Amino acid sequence: MSASTPIRIAGATAAVAVTGFLGYAVYFDYMRRHSSEFRKGLKKQHKKLAVAAEAQSKAEKERNSKLLREALVQIQLEAPPTSPEQQEAYFQEQVAEGEKTATMGPEYHVKSASHFYRALRVYPQPLELLGIYQRVVPPPVWALLIELTSLSGAAAAGSASGSTAIPAPPQASVSDIDDASPVGGEAPSPTSASASQGSGTDWEKVSEEA
Image (tube, rainbow, N blue to C red; front, side, top):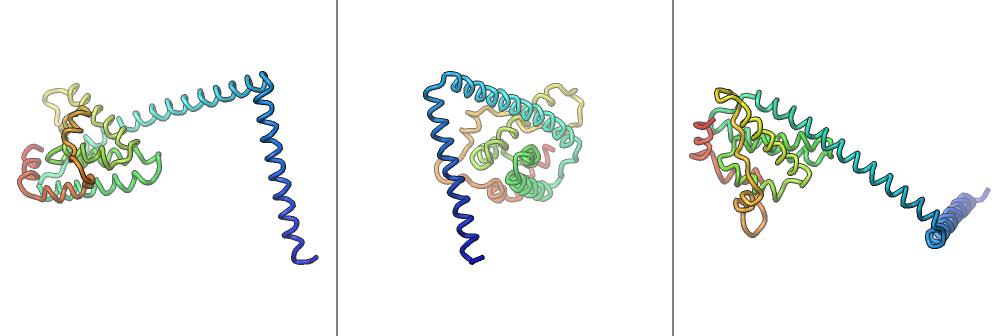
């Protein structure tokens, strides 16, 4: 067998595959144009796919909401950092984890939102940080973070006045967040926002309020 034989076989196989694909494309286009039954079948398939996609989306939202509620309970059980230095280090750590897990796929988005929320609750100016988050956090994670802050606000409102749970960051409307966002230029990263705050008065205020 000559060395060119495998190449000829591969070429012939590829040619057959291309011919088959083109033939099916021609057949599909012809049937779509001339057969009402074929078009009805396509519509049914599209409808089934749409229903399946909607069901999957609904199930994913319910799953994420459940995971967010569980995450909130866990966060509220965690002891907050006390000193300004500890709070700033905690902030940096949580933002770094949030950024890392945000890139690990949809199954890690709730975890990412939880880390960003942990950072938010110790930041001296939460509305400002939410404005930065809105511009730099991936949209799916951002949506989960907003849902988590809403859940925390509802939990705080429904808790007893003598509860020892960690106070939730104030809830914000979209207009509030937009007003707090930096205007013009590139959005600073959450970690650079921490650096601009330093470990001075603002972090001391957080310590006093915690």
